Amino acid sequence: MKYTSEQIEQINNSISIVDYAKQYLELEEIKGEHWCVCCFHDDVNASMSFNAEKNSYYCFGCKSGGYLINFVMQYHKLSFPMAIKHIIELSNLKLEEKEYSDVYEYLKKKNHKPPEPVIQRSYLPANAMNKYTKKPIEEWLREGVTQEVLDKYDVRYDIAGNAIVFPIHDEHGRILAIKVRTLYPNYNELGIKKYRYYQKIFTNDFLFGLWQNKKNIEYQQEVIVVEAEKGVMILESYGYKNVVALSTSVMTSQQIDLLLSLKCRIVLALDKDVTKKDLCVLAKPLKLFATVECVYDSKNVLVGKESPYDKGKEVWQQLYSEKIIL
Image (cartoon, rainbow, N blue to C red):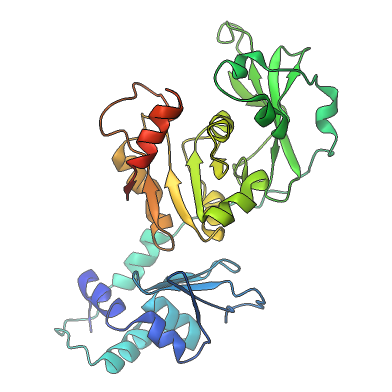
């Protein structure tokens, strides 16, 4: 038997994955998601989620996930053709017969990604910032960041390097690196990057602000995602304490996992030069397991590469109130 991609989708949606899983697992519904202890690894925290609307599942522990066919294959240890046969028999689905195709192999190749390198992290000591000068950062105070917020994120001066410095923490509070914002106006001529790290970061497997703001995020059931660390500080100065930064405009798979592990609504508030199409691409892996919204400047209030918070609190609040679902 050969199946088209449309038939594969039809099979995936022929039975509710929640109803199917309930036959084998004890599910608990929490805010529209159905949770249970994962059956694919030694789990004690109810890490597996089933989404009825998207007919999908995902484990935040072992990263197993997919749709109905994937679950049937993984749970019953069936081959792809046998899983399809099992679902068709249960659902009494009638499909037009064709010769068996390479749909499964095609999908495997399409979705295949090379394994990501394992980064062996070394951490800086907890007192790593003590060598830098703690005094008001006038440049950022003028941009709207309060002194209280600067103190919270331990922003300091590196007098020797003529730069603003602040620590980058992982989700457990360990210092991964120190980020630098040069104060030399002619940094291009000097061959210096405007922003850089004093230590090699290798990959963005962190979210700036997550360690400090996780409790607020959990309480509000929403996380706002910006590009720059200073954006986290500006928005907190506006009163928003549920913000994290990608530290880039590209979202890594590790950052996707961190965002999904929060089990809350995700609001993308990226810079003006990130198009709506780009936002949809970024949101795609998140939408399977979370509600994803974006702060989108449909009225062209912003220009160039401006961020949604660059024109002050009032403009930010207006843009935030008009956010759209992706």
